[in-house]
Amino acid sequence: MKALVSLLAAAALLAGCATNTMPEPAPEVRRDATRSVTKIELVYNEHDQLTVMDGGGSAIIGWAGVFGPVGTLVAIGVEVGTRVTKASRLERRTREFTAAVKNSGAASLNRQFAEQLAARLRTGGREVKLTPAPRVDGELAQLQAAGFQSTPGYSTLVVRVTTIYSAPDMTSSFKPFVAIEQSLKDEQQAVLYQTTHTSDLEEPTFLAYDGLLQDTAKAEDGLRQGLSRILQPAYAGMFGGDESPPRLAHAKTAQTAGFAPK
View 1: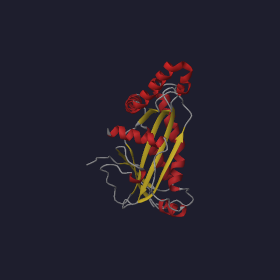
View 2: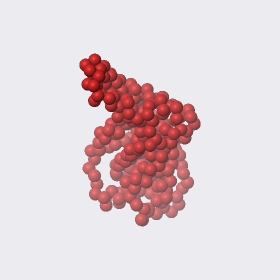
View 3: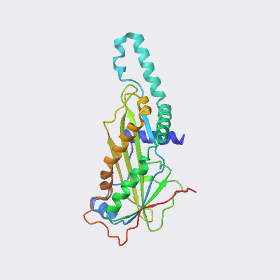
Protein backbone atom coordinates (compact mmCIF):
# COMPACT_ATOMS: atom_id res chain seq x y z
CA MET A 1 0.00 0.00 0.00
CA LYS A 2 2.83 2.43 0.84
CA ALA A 3 4.39 1.75 -2.56
CA LEU A 4 1.07 2.44 -4.29
CA VAL A 5 0.68 5.73 -2.41
CA SER A 6 4.15 6.73 -3.56
CA LEU A 7 3.29 5.86 -7.16
CA LEU A 8 0.02 7.78 -7.03
CA ALA A 9 1.92 10.79 -5.68
CA ALA A 10 4.25 10.56 -8.67
CA ALA A 11 1.22 10.38 -10.94
CA ALA A 12 -0.22 13.49 -9.29
CA LEU A 13 3.04 15.32 -9.95
CA LEU A 14 2.83 14.37 -13.61
CA ALA A 15 -0.75 15.63 -13.74
CA GLY A 16 0.29 18.93 -12.17
CA CYS A 17 -1.55 18.26 -8.92
CA ALA A 18 1.45 18.60 -6.60
CA THR A 19 1.19 21.76 -4.52
CA ASN A 20 3.52 23.89 -2.43
CA THR A 21 1.77 26.03 0.15
CA MET A 22 4.89 27.88 1.30
CA PRO A 23 4.95 31.60 0.42
CA GLU A 24 7.46 32.48 -2.28
CA PRO A 25 10.33 34.58 -0.84
CA ALA A 26 11.49 37.68 -2.66
CA PRO A 27 14.24 36.82 -5.22
CA GLU A 28 16.95 38.76 -3.36
CA VAL A 29 16.03 37.09 -0.06
CA ARG A 30 16.11 33.62 -1.62
CA ARG A 31 19.39 34.36 -3.41
CA ASP A 32 21.12 35.54 -0.23
CA ALA A 33 19.83 32.58 1.79
CA THR A 34 20.82 29.85 -0.68
CA ARG A 35 24.04 31.35 -2.02
CA SER A 36 25.46 31.83 1.48
CA VAL A 37 25.35 28.06 2.13
CA THR A 38 28.88 26.61 1.88
CA LYS A 39 28.49 23.06 3.24
CA ILE A 40 25.67 20.86 1.96
CA GLU A 41 24.55 17.32 2.74
CA LEU A 42 22.72 16.20 -0.40
CA VAL A 43 20.12 13.55 0.46
CA TYR A 44 18.77 11.62 -2.54
CA ASN A 45 16.61 8.54 -3.32
CA GLU A 46 18.80 5.48 -2.87
CA HIS A 47 16.75 3.26 -5.19
CA ASP A 48 15.32 4.17 -8.58
CA GLN A 49 11.54 4.04 -9.00
CA LEU A 50 10.74 3.95 -12.71
CA THR A 51 7.01 4.56 -12.86
CA VAL A 52 4.90 3.32 -15.79
CA MET A 53 1.32 4.55 -16.01
CA ASP A 54 -1.57 5.04 -18.41
CA GLY A 55 -4.84 6.88 -17.96
CA GLY A 56 -6.98 3.86 -18.78
CA GLY A 57 -9.67 3.78 -21.43
CA SER A 58 -9.07 4.16 -25.14
CA ALA A 59 -8.76 7.00 -27.61
CA ILE A 60 -11.31 5.16 -29.75
CA ILE A 61 -14.14 5.76 -27.24
CA GLY A 62 -15.20 8.84 -29.20
CA TRP A 63 -15.94 6.59 -32.19
CA ALA A 64 -17.99 4.08 -30.23
CA GLY A 65 -21.29 5.19 -31.79
CA VAL A 66 -20.03 4.27 -35.24
CA PHE A 67 -20.25 0.60 -34.28
CA GLY A 68 -23.90 0.69 -33.23
CA PRO A 69 -25.54 0.12 -29.83
CA VAL A 70 -23.69 -3.13 -29.08
CA GLY A 71 -20.34 -1.64 -30.06
CA THR A 72 -21.04 1.37 -27.90
CA LEU A 73 -21.79 -0.79 -24.86
CA VAL A 74 -18.64 -2.84 -25.38
CA ALA A 75 -16.52 0.29 -25.76
CA ILE A 76 -17.98 1.82 -22.61
CA GLY A 77 -17.37 -1.43 -20.73
CA VAL A 78 -13.72 -1.44 -21.76
CA GLU A 79 -13.40 2.24 -20.90
CA VAL A 80 -14.79 1.82 -17.39
CA GLY A 81 -13.00 -1.46 -16.71
CA THR A 82 -9.54 -0.20 -17.65
CA ARG A 83 -9.93 2.96 -15.62
CA VAL A 84 -10.94 0.97 -12.55
CA THR A 85 -7.85 -1.27 -12.85
CA LYS A 86 -5.31 1.42 -13.73
CA ALA A 87 -3.95 1.60 -10.15
CA SER A 88 -3.06 -2.11 -10.16
CA ARG A 89 -1.47 -1.73 -13.63
CA LEU A 90 0.52 1.22 -12.37
CA GLU A 91 1.93 -0.75 -9.44
CA ARG A 92 2.65 -3.95 -11.41
CA ARG A 93 4.23 -2.28 -14.43
CA THR A 94 6.37 0.02 -12.28
CA ARG A 95 7.67 -2.96 -10.34
CA GLU A 96 8.38 -4.96 -13.53
CA PHE A 97 10.03 -2.13 -15.45
CA THR A 98 12.17 -0.99 -12.51
CA ALA A 99 13.38 -4.56 -11.98
CA ALA A 100 14.08 -5.05 -15.71
CA VAL A 101 16.24 -1.93 -15.90
CA LYS A 102 18.07 -2.83 -12.68
CA ASN A 103 18.72 -6.40 -13.89
CA SER A 104 20.14 -5.04 -17.15
CA GLY A 105 23.07 -3.63 -15.17
CA ALA A 106 22.26 0.02 -15.83
CA ALA A 107 23.72 2.53 -13.39
CA SER A 108 21.33 4.18 -10.96
CA LEU A 109 19.63 7.25 -12.44
CA ASN A 110 19.12 8.76 -8.99
CA ARG A 111 22.75 8.26 -8.00
CA GLN A 112 24.03 9.72 -11.26
CA PHE A 113 21.84 12.81 -10.97
CA ALA A 114 22.92 13.33 -7.36
CA GLU A 115 26.59 13.08 -8.36
CA GLN A 116 26.10 15.54 -11.23
CA LEU A 117 24.29 18.01 -8.98
CA ALA A 118 27.00 17.63 -6.33
CA ALA A 119 29.68 18.35 -8.95
CA ARG A 120 27.77 21.47 -10.02
CA LEU A 121 27.56 22.63 -6.40
CA ARG A 122 31.30 22.09 -5.91
CA THR A 123 31.96 24.17 -9.01
CA GLY A 124 30.25 26.99 -7.12
CA GLY A 125 32.77 26.59 -4.29
CA ARG A 126 30.72 24.46 -1.93
CA GLU A 127 31.60 21.37 0.06
CA VAL A 128 29.13 18.55 -0.62
CA LYS A 129 28.42 15.28 1.15
CA LEU A 130 26.21 12.68 -0.59
CA THR A 131 23.79 10.67 1.54
CA PRO A 132 21.55 7.95 -0.01
CA ALA A 133 18.19 7.44 1.68
CA PRO A 134 14.85 5.66 1.11
CA ARG A 135 12.51 7.53 -1.24
CA VAL A 136 11.00 10.54 0.47
CA ASP A 137 7.20 10.64 0.40
CA GLY A 138 4.80 13.48 1.08
CA GLU A 139 4.40 17.02 -0.21
CA LEU A 140 7.36 19.22 -1.03
CA ALA A 141 6.89 21.36 2.06
CA GLN A 142 7.43 18.30 4.27
CA LEU A 143 10.24 16.53 2.40
CA GLN A 144 12.07 14.49 5.03
CA ALA A 145 13.79 11.09 4.86
CA ALA A 146 12.53 8.70 7.54
CA GLY A 147 15.16 8.23 10.25
CA PHE A 148 17.53 10.77 8.70
CA GLN A 149 19.74 12.78 11.06
CA SER A 150 21.60 15.71 9.56
CA THR A 151 25.36 16.02 9.89
CA PRO A 152 26.39 18.84 12.26
CA GLY A 153 27.79 21.81 10.40
CA TYR A 154 25.98 21.00 7.14
CA SER A 155 22.85 22.41 5.58
CA THR A 156 20.58 19.74 4.08
CA LEU A 157 19.42 19.55 0.46
CA VAL A 158 16.75 16.87 0.04
CA VAL A 159 16.29 15.89 -3.61
CA ARG A 160 13.41 13.73 -4.82
CA VAL A 161 13.77 12.35 -8.35
CA THR A 162 10.66 11.23 -10.24
CA THR A 163 11.03 9.29 -13.50
CA ILE A 164 7.92 8.21 -15.43
CA TYR A 165 6.81 6.70 -18.71
CA SER A 166 3.19 7.68 -19.27
CA ALA A 167 0.40 7.37 -21.82
CA PRO A 168 -2.90 9.28 -21.72
CA ASP A 169 -4.85 6.05 -22.35
CA MET A 170 -4.27 2.38 -23.11
CA THR A 171 -4.01 2.85 -26.88
CA SER A 172 -1.56 5.78 -26.93
CA SER A 173 2.24 5.72 -26.88
CA PHE A 174 4.36 5.95 -23.74
CA LYS A 175 6.66 8.97 -23.42
CA PRO A 176 9.16 9.94 -20.72
CA PHE A 177 8.66 12.54 -18.01
CA VAL A 178 11.10 13.61 -15.29
CA ALA A 179 10.78 15.85 -12.24
CA ILE A 180 13.17 17.13 -9.59
CA GLU A 181 11.87 18.39 -6.25
CA GLN A 182 14.31 20.06 -3.86
CA SER A 183 14.13 21.34 -0.31
CA LEU A 184 17.10 23.23 1.16
CA LYS A 185 17.31 23.49 4.96
CA ASP A 186 19.81 25.27 7.18
CA GLU A 187 21.83 23.60 9.93
CA GLN A 188 18.84 23.84 12.28
CA GLN A 189 16.67 22.15 9.61
CA ALA A 190 14.59 25.26 8.95
CA VAL A 191 13.50 25.43 5.29
CA LEU A 192 15.38 28.06 3.28
CA TYR A 193 13.90 27.45 -0.17
CA GLN A 194 12.11 24.80 -2.25
CA THR A 195 11.83 24.25 -5.99
CA THR A 196 10.21 21.86 -8.45
CA HIS A 197 11.35 21.39 -12.05
CA THR A 198 9.60 19.13 -14.55
CA SER A 199 10.24 18.16 -18.16
CA ASP A 200 7.91 16.44 -20.63
CA LEU A 201 9.94 14.70 -23.34
CA GLU A 202 8.88 13.59 -26.80
CA GLU A 203 11.48 10.86 -27.23
CA PRO A 204 11.88 7.98 -27.02
CA THR A 205 8.34 6.86 -27.73
CA PHE A 206 7.04 3.31 -27.17
CA LEU A 207 3.82 2.19 -28.82
CA ALA A 208 3.05 -0.31 -26.06
CA TYR A 209 4.19 -1.24 -22.56
CA ASP A 210 5.93 -4.37 -23.87
CA GLY A 211 8.26 -2.11 -25.83
CA LEU A 212 9.66 -0.71 -22.60
CA LEU A 213 10.53 -4.20 -21.38
CA GLN A 214 11.99 -5.26 -24.72
CA ASP A 215 14.35 -2.29 -25.00
CA THR A 216 15.21 -1.27 -21.47
CA ALA A 217 18.47 0.35 -22.59
CA LYS A 218 16.69 2.79 -24.88
CA ALA A 219 13.94 3.47 -22.33
CA GLU A 220 16.39 4.04 -19.50
CA ASP A 221 18.56 6.31 -21.65
CA GLY A 222 15.53 8.47 -22.43
CA LEU A 223 15.01 9.14 -18.73
CA ARG A 224 18.74 9.68 -18.22
CA GLN A 225 18.82 12.29 -20.99
CA GLY A 226 15.83 14.02 -19.44
CA LEU A 227 17.59 14.26 -16.08
CA SER A 228 20.72 15.63 -17.74
CA ARG A 229 18.68 18.38 -19.39
CA ILE A 230 17.01 19.36 -16.14
CA LEU A 231 20.25 19.51 -14.12
CA GLN A 232 21.14 23.15 -14.81
CA PRO A 233 17.58 24.49 -14.37
CA ALA A 234 17.36 22.60 -11.06
CA TYR A 235 20.64 24.10 -9.88
CA ALA A 236 19.91 27.63 -11.07
CA GLY A 237 16.37 27.55 -9.70
CA MET A 238 17.72 26.85 -6.23
CA PHE A 239 21.06 28.67 -6.15
CA GLY A 240 20.94 31.17 -9.02
CA GLY A 241 24.13 32.11 -10.85
CA ASP A 242 27.69 31.88 -9.62
CA GLU A 243 28.82 35.46 -10.10
CA SER A 244 30.10 35.56 -6.52
CA PRO A 245 30.37 31.96 -5.28
CA PRO A 246 30.85 31.41 -1.55
CA ARG A 247 34.48 31.28 -0.51
CA LEU A 248 35.66 28.01 0.94
CA ALA A 249 39.22 27.83 2.19
CA HIS A 250 39.73 24.11 1.62
CA ALA A 251 37.07 22.27 -0.36
CA LYS A 252 37.10 18.59 0.53
CA THR A 253 36.82 15.75 -1.94
CA ALA A 254 33.54 13.94 -2.55
CA GLN A 255 32.07 12.14 0.44
CA THR A 256 29.37 9.52 0.51
CA ALA A 257 27.56 8.78 3.74
CA GLY A 258 25.80 5.50 4.33
CA PHE A 259 22.17 5.75 5.43
CA ALA A 260 21.05 3.64 8.33
CA PRO A 261 17.56 4.55 9.51
CA LYS A 262 16.86 3.86 13.15
